[in-house]
Length: 154
Image (cartoon, rainbow, N blue to C red; front, side, top):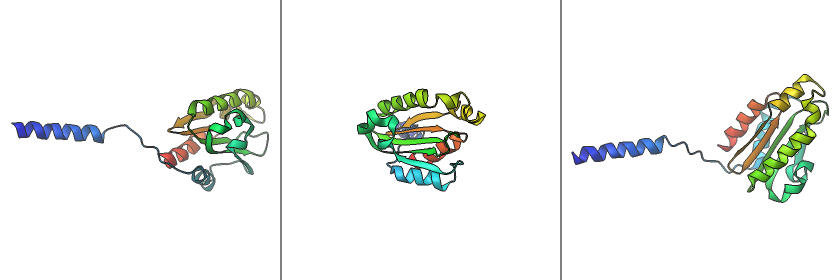
């Protein structure tokens, strides 16, 4: 009977460990994530402006909290295509800076400036964090880009 109870306990423990929902976050360089997004032709609007996150105006007050990051945007100013990925130790400060950017700088796109797709891109934009990565996506295929980012970091 002790052997049976021990075996049952072992199976239970292995089952709990195997079904654990803890997700590990890989330590992927930001440049690899950017290359994956560019190589998959996920950015449908070309040409693209590529800026180091520390140099982007929306991150002026939090640039010391950024380990590394990038900002990709459509160079055509009537089409919205924003993809930001930042690695940081202060996720909440970076998310707050992006929220302010979204409220202030994307207001005209939310009103439909350029095309109806722009208003949809703002409404369906994604601002999330996984581990010490923060990403913001405002474009018509935001879910596809998010999937690629998550493939890289999880």
